[in-house]
Amino acid sequence: MSGTPTVTAVVDALRSAQPAWQELSVTARVRWLVRYRNWLLDNQSRLEHILSQETGKPSAEAALEIPYVVQAINYHCRRAPLLLADRRPGPHGILAITKRQLIVQRPYPVVGVITPWNFPLGLSLLDAVPALLAGCAVVVKPSELTPSAVSVAVGGWAEIGAPPVLRVVTGAGGAGAAVVDAVDFIQFTGSARTGRIIARAAAERLIPCALELGGKDAMIVLADADIERAANAAVWGRWPTAARCASRWNGPTSSRRSTTGS
Image (cartoon, rainbow, N blue to C red):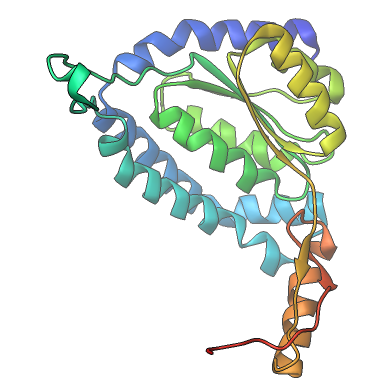
């Protein structure tokens, strides 16, 4: 487990390593992420076994997280050179006709990623990957209920010899609070209750945070729908991962006839 002093030490080490990572070209950072993607694929079976063991997911559902992460790495690596390039926007009006503008992207030095137990690996790396490509260092704090797969996966970053800008800390709420107190940007996925606490802490420090909080989605079945297909969709949408997903549907909430024209 990682107490507050350990979290502070990890973040201090990341902060020291981050400037050299930022100085690498985007192309060089992409190359490291591609090597990491390959490591994830090489270790996919091991990671899926750990996920299944610690979350209780069936193997078929545990097998979804690595491909999801790999797809995200491919996407962000393809888009990063364009999205992170300097831009020179044109004047926005006659009063700015003589002005010249240059937009230069600068990373937050250390990003803290705090994730829940239902998709421990997918949610952790989906947030860490774009931050790394942007030049940030990243500390991941997974749920204390499911830390193993994330710890092994983050360890793979060191195994490929990548710069020491991705670390993991484990523990309960105290470790998460220590991360919030130490980093420059917080990405949190979890409950609304904890999200409010993090939002207040971030506001007190005047640092940005992004919060993806729990909830449920309505499923609307119209009167002219194919009922068998709708029922199958409702079961699929509600019960994967034993219904432990914030976007899962509660069930039909309306039954009105659709209109397709005048």
